[in-house]
Image 1 (cartoon, rainbow, N blue to C red):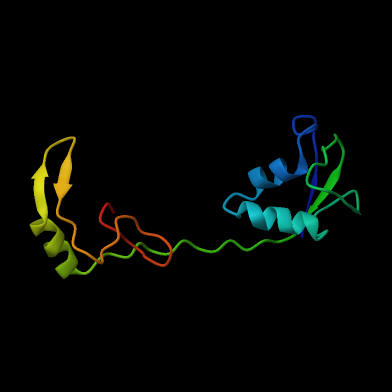
Image 2: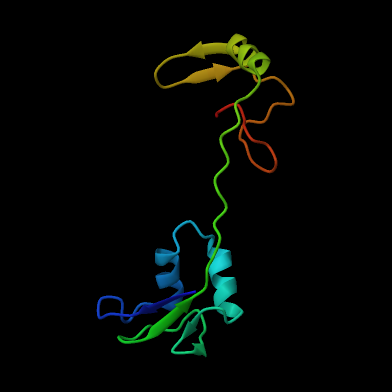
Length: 117
């Protein structure tokens, strides 16, 4: 648990914005959850996310774990070769490919890579 005393520079700022700045890398939803559940306290009292900090307030910030970023997954060599063969035209500003079916354009939703990555 970390206790922080608010100074004049931070006074007037909303508690949620302050926590987002202090807890870099922590998802916004997690910050709002710890405020909502009362884990973050100001002057030993629960506060809402729209509370404005005042000079001299003592903020209790609980320890929050941040998930480590996973190493990017490289596509299989066969996929890379297949995409290189699918290039129809390429210059500095344009790339035209005959995208194979079943291969995503963008990564996400359980896919670690797509054509543009």
